[in-house]
Length: 86
Image (cartoon, rainbow, N blue to C red; front, side, top):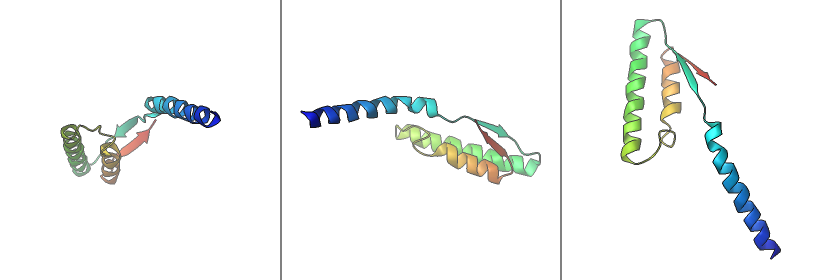
């Protein structure tokens, strides 16, 4: 009986913590580069992100499950843009 109560408590705690996941969602602010060549580079990043999100929708996954945002942020930064996390 004690084992069952411990297991039940663990399940309840796990479910409660899983519900908090939406509060941990990160938000980003993007500052574009000044150079026109770098701006063109960031537009390729945006196209890649949209493509990634389209594939995720086809697979019925969320964008974060496919790591579209982290990949986009890396690309954007590499092109000279600035990514600020809030």
